[in-house]
Length: 322
Image 1 (cartoon, rainbow, N blue to C red):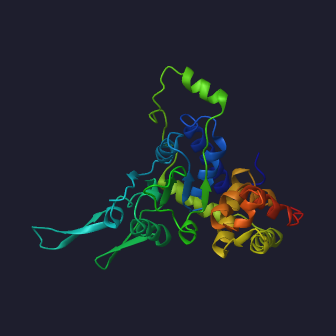
Image 2 (image 1 turned 135 degrees about the vertical axis):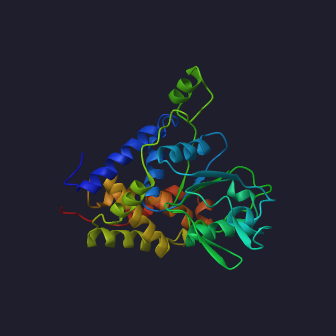
Image 3 (image 1 turned 60 degrees about the vertical axis):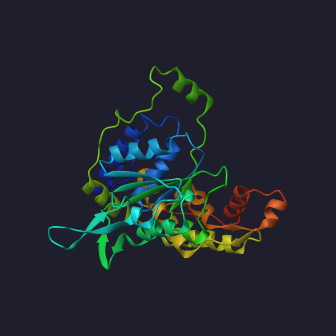
């Protein structure tokens, strides 16, 4: 259902529904994850998926790139991957005797950084700098990344041998952190029942263009947010900073990220204005990886999820008259 949307907003809503429909062909039973990744893309942000191998992270990224008609590259991060592999490098042209820039893997529309925690901190920093600035500088020459530019990075939370975990200051570069999780029992049975258990994205069709994605991001940015909702976002951020189980609360960048994805959520729900429910829909996904929890929470048997729920319940929800 849509509420008085203008023509551009209706186009973005229809385009989003088409993309979701295409990705669902290969990602079964994970509609919420598909929606949240798309919300992040419409918000101009990057995604961190922390999960075990084999649950469909790579398939999701590839399916999205095909549905959105985006140039796509994937890199398996290992300890020997160099920053120049990500950003690119200069080589001497024998004919012109000039240095020519050779783009790195990150110079694409949608870049999948597989197991980002298994490479060196130097290589991680190179990618995170590209994500933040939208450009790379090689031998004093600046090269801008394509628009749109989306990074989906993955981490395997199991096993710490040979890993270099991202520090909190770098985790903040990702708009959301998501977990796909195992399929439900019924979905897994249906998958096994299928005649073809080799998951392929061949069935996914491109239903969007680069220009449509750029327009969608601009349209999302113009969604109306009342002062009451802005105050609600600020109050939630402030509550994380005052919670006794949280050592480091939500940063101002985190508040801005929450605002952006709340606008996208409102539009995908058919509204041209944000309500508190839109803010809460992705609050944990935006906030959790930005918070540093006190060790006494673990000692007292209080989970991170419970702490976030307590933060939400401590803030009064405003009434919105629209």
